[in-house]
Length: 542
Image (cartoon, rainbow, N blue to C red; front, side):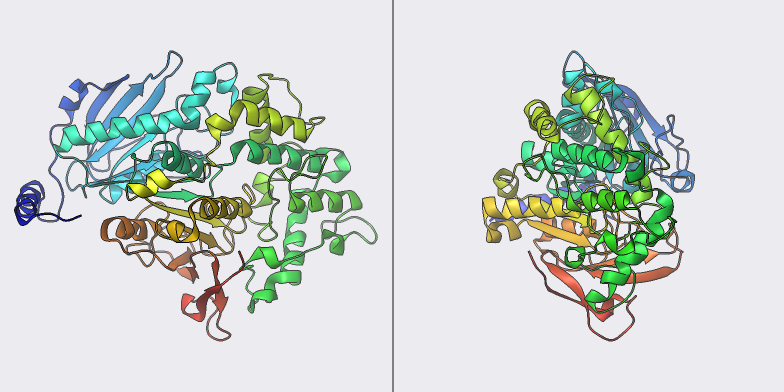
């Protein structure tokens, strides 16, 4: 946009007045924010938190084992609590955190995993630590992330969860930020994974003016079909006791997959660069004699084939893509999401059962065992697709205002098939054209990564924002996104890193490039396979 010289001079003068030595905007009084009026919402707390003085009042860290060390590193910030009531049955809890000292002039909204129910203080702490104003919400209910009982008989709360709460959070946060700093924020970003990835795409589709840049990780955007797929998985593995695949057999399955496919990409490293090329047959490890953890029974072979095949109805119409082979074993693998510690005790079982009993059929005693998937998915789509699905491929409004979108997904995701993100990306290209899509959107597929993280491959690439481990655009999706939004420099390959531990001081185990889809990282044929410099991005299949 062309600007006359006088406007440029005025802008420079105002910027110099508002920013300190390191570019940080000056803050006002925290306590006075309690008097700020918000539409359909009220501020219930406005309190300055001393550096290192934050302690969660609720058990928010269900996905993170121990965040105490992170909280101790936080600078002083203004903590604002808000209650939003856009409907008669709404009670949306929101928190906005505002750095007291140095603010980078940017806002980062954060989402939720699973059925939400808690504010993600961990994600907010990461953002504030790096100088962002940030906000989070429980999306309108208090519950563990696998519990959907709050939805039974509460359609307005489902709407809050589906899309309304994140938008309310965003609008309230922007108003508070402007009041606190006395200036409009320079740029707004949203980053989250799983259900948070669904929330991210929902923002781009429904509220294109909310954010300048969005990161959607492993998005659960085809919600009604994803949770029907969870029922398919449950039926496949628990239809009879003999079909259940115990977690003790997962190491043998993972070894068999690697023996069949690992070397296909030119290097045997326990990572499948593109699992679509792996055609592992579970029958290869059927028990020839007595059953053990090293082999599968005929019933278990059948169940495993169904998991890889993916959900479909009685007529063979695909409902949701199947799981890809790779990383079945490990802490974030199938033992958590698919098999669980026993029959009907996996996370996906809880999600599928909760969705249908508490949202679709409003029957607390609904049973998955005899459900007809064709009828079930039709009922789910009729009642919930408009509220929960974020599958609209027309992102013209988001693109038109300069919005930029980055999607990422781990190839070895056991919770949401990686093929779902590829399907959505293709739908955007089909709707908007390849050239238009390339102008504002990217998809990165992470080899060896499970759901949002974990797995044998590199899983740290700044997807939660800048961290001490990802301080430049070459290693950070967030900084690459910001560079794209603010400077017009489109991202290319991102270097992903695998660390021995969570801290920045831990040893680097490996690095590998994340290539912009459809490109994939190919081993050059020589060099250390744990070093990104030994790989090159080449055109892959679409």
